[in-house]
Each structure stands twice: as C-alpha cells, then as structure tokens.
Image (cartoon, rainbow, N blue to C red; front, side, top):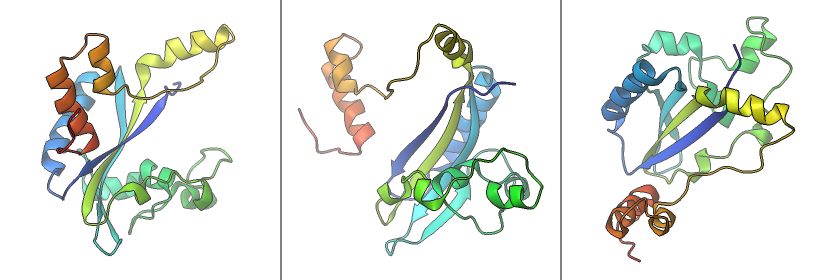
Length: 182
C-alpha cells in the first residue's frame, strides 16, 4: 500500500494535562477519517525547567503496545524513549526491514529545541492518504513539490474565510500570544 504525504504537527501547551482531550480526538480521527488522514504516531513531550524531557504516548495504545511498536516520531526527531527500541536498532538486529535510510542525530528534525522549558507539546505524525492520487497524478505529469504550509487566519480574513474577530482569536490561539492585537 502506498504511503501518502506525511506531516509532523507540533502543538504547544503551557503545562501538562492536555492528554485526555487530545487522546479522545485522536481516537475519533482514527475511527472516522482513516481513509483520508491516518494518525501514524502521537507523543506528549514535557520539557522540565532544566531542559530534561519526559515523553508519553498519546492515543489508544497501551504502554506495552507503544513499547512494542516504538515511536516513529521519536526516530524522526532523534528522541530516545526509555524502554523502546529505535527503528535503527531494530534494523541492525534484523527485526525490521525499512531500507537503508537512517536518521542521524544531525539530520533529525529540530523540533524539541522549540519547546520552551517548563511547558509541554503534542507531536502528531499524520499521513494524508487523500493526497496519494493527487500526488501521483502530479508526478505522472512532471510536477513536483515546491512548498507547503498552513495559512494564517489573519491572511484568510482578506479572502473572506474569517471575520476579523475570529481570525484574531485563532491567530492568538495558533501563536500562543493572548496579548497580540492587530
């Protein structure tokens, strides 16, 4: 089965305690939308004031299931989770055949440094299955990826998708800046 485009979303929280609400929504997304968007992995990361990290799996997996499955996000961002084996370790032990690619520490996505000390983050790895036919059609016709990104709610006001008030509220939520006014 082909893999669709994969996206890592990192969402910040002032403190721990968000897991229950996120777990409920991840479960709903997995049940209702799997043909369109698949949740490949999800982690809660807590950065202590001194910079140490605590990690917890999000979603419906038990701790034992999470340890057995490992974490694709941890491998992607170069994070070692106590009790879990990385994809590279499983590959070197002959337990996983995922090709020759290996994420080296210097190649890992640098998202953990962006989490402020004393706060938390949810890291969610999504596969956009809906985009497989579109991506394949683009490739067949000679096209290629140039860029991607989320559009700010403030920019969506200009094209009529949000009122100014709604855009401001969503912008403050997205940036974590409740003091911002425009």
